[in-house]
Image 1 (tube, rainbow, N blue to C red):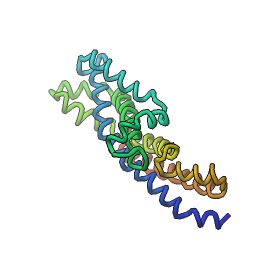
Image 2 (cartoon, one colour):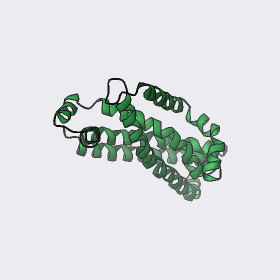
Image 3 (cartoon, rainbow, N blue to C red):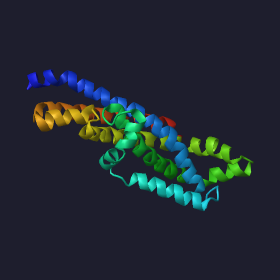
Image 4 (cartoon, rainbow, N blue to C red):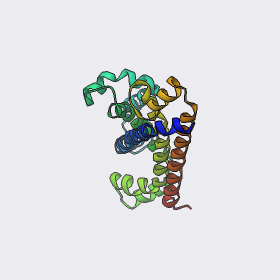
Length: 221
């Protein structure tokens, strides 16, 4: 058992680094694009700030369309696009393309719902004091929703840690590729057990860090 683990250890570390690399690329881009996208969804929805019903219908339908694709099918379906963007459909960098495409509308929905949960009275108070729409979004909505946004980032990070393992099925590398090679082809259950333990620890670490940030940002606590 120890010999199997020791021989596989360098590859396991490399696989974990590849998985973290996917997350480091995916999550910040998803937050950077998904936050304004979710904000626009919130602002243009019926009975909100901007009266753009047709634009909301189109944008809402587009977000729903992307979210309706199972991740594995999405990875395969956009292989030509991935190859056009990064020059190849294989490897960890290529795997981040479908991850980002999947994560952006996923996070945007979180933002839309979080902004909907902001106390309407706070927004009305800002409006009565003459705040414009940009000030309301930036200084009121985002400030009130900051703990919810931090929680959404935590959830997306944990979710896409799992999604990154799927990338191994189509040559994306990372912990999924490692699991296929050692757990499926070689059937080394001891190595797989260690891999699972490490992944559980990663999830717990991300969740603990996220919960800590949420508590710090939530003014109700």
